[in-house]
Length: 136
Figure (cartoon, rainbow, N blue to C red):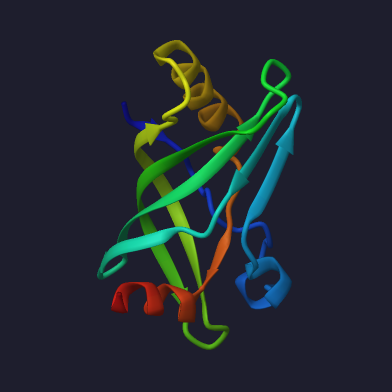
């Protein structure tokens, strides 16, 4: 299942105005009854401006008051600001979602929540963290 998410990663509008606080993990998004927590992505590859990675997530909904933990795998176009030492992920394409504790129906519901609630969000990433991830 491929879910198209645009601009998943920059809570601050301007890369130059990003503070260290905005670059901290995890990141939280609350919309309606959904509360989504994104943990620091693990970068698997970066070629030119194309990045691949994965991230742990948890989702709490009105039907599930305890967080449900899972993972997303994604591809993204990345915009790097070497002066500010930040990277902004653009045009995120989530290629896989997995919630081990969820049955197939709940996993599809959680995938829809991610698609509906997160596609308007964006997050900046520390360039130094990104480079350190690539070294591993």
